Image (cartoon, rainbow, N blue to C red):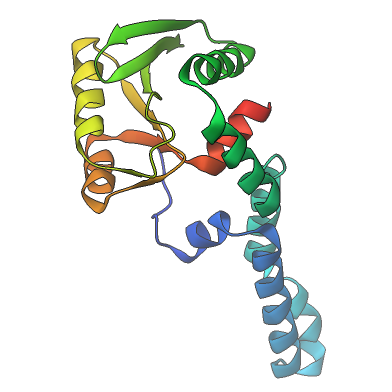
Length: 188
């Protein structure tokens, strides 16, 4: 049985924030605890926020390659100016750099496919420039994933997904790769 953290738990929310947010919460807890505890137990205040400092360390490790807001904005602008052949070539090169053999697909709804271990993954990236994506491209991707017997489906987008599209992706288990994750992937 694989343990998963609840998406909206305090620690899950802190993992999605910058690392210094968790560290700051830990410092605040240590200061308040140190002030409220009796003098002979005040040293224990250092250990009380330890879970927050562990989360800060985990968040810092996850975010070590994440671009800053200015770098992200510049990279998104640059990616938005690329043509499909250039973008698809860069995407394919980035995926192959991670050690996967990528196959280009000519099917509606999916653009690439690769096998990672025992998992087959299909990826839709052709609409990466769309400012807002509705549910239909995700339905097409899901149909392509089912037709190709893929275990996972990924959708790349620099823009936002509509609420219906977000719900569909969550229910169907489609991984949505947004602007920051896409920029990080292409920079590796």
